[in-house]
Image (cartoon, rainbow, N blue to C red; front, top):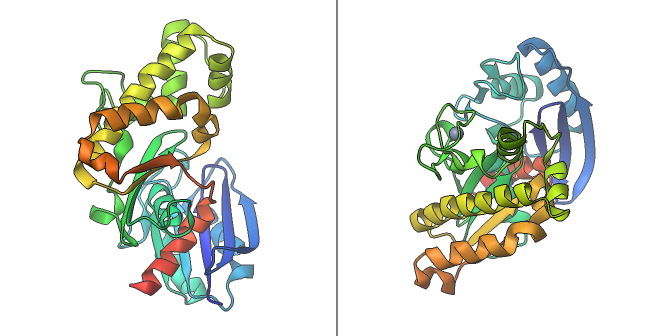
Length: 298
Ligand SMILES: [Zn+2]
């Protein structure tokens, strides 16, 4: 069976896995990355992580946070990987392994993984929304990823939900990411209480304990997210909308309301076909490996 390597570059570690075409993980290697990074040392860790897997496979797919240039295969910069700048991922891996290499942002990889191996793989098109530290998105139509100019398309997290709203990390006010993401929930909670929560789990725990302020922030966040997704549905008409990422662990606290708000605001005819739900908890590495299987198909 054909095999591919998927590499998930995150803040803090690199995970490389070998998959067969059915999406089965055959072997995995995880390397922590130090806090103080520079291009050279990072590329050495990246190559050392992939090395033991690079035999008898079709190619290497890599996913990382953006912004990036997917044509040149360069990570321009990343908020979670301070110290790296214009990192030539594709060129270094081709030189080291003489294999084809594809590189896309992690949300696009997640979308492709969902489209090929997820719960909604039998639908014609999927809009995948990643809910984690921030909000990302990817769109796959008939098995083909729409990646936009240099791979920076479908940045749904930085579409405006609240005109003149809270300041986002991107420098603009009112992005949906400022209302429905770890960064958003913690930021809004701190604004009102001066209390800095550690992570999203803590925030959702407060919601479960019936903390009125946390509930209010979540309820507004649900509306903000619903309307950002509504906008994307009106533009793309996907057959499925799939929510993935760490925050979907708490889907029971917001999923129903979110789906209802989306369904009641899009064109009614779209509801006949549209499926909405949380995804299949696929690994980021599988999403990245899907780049290889997908390109081989085209
Ligand atoms: Zn933004």
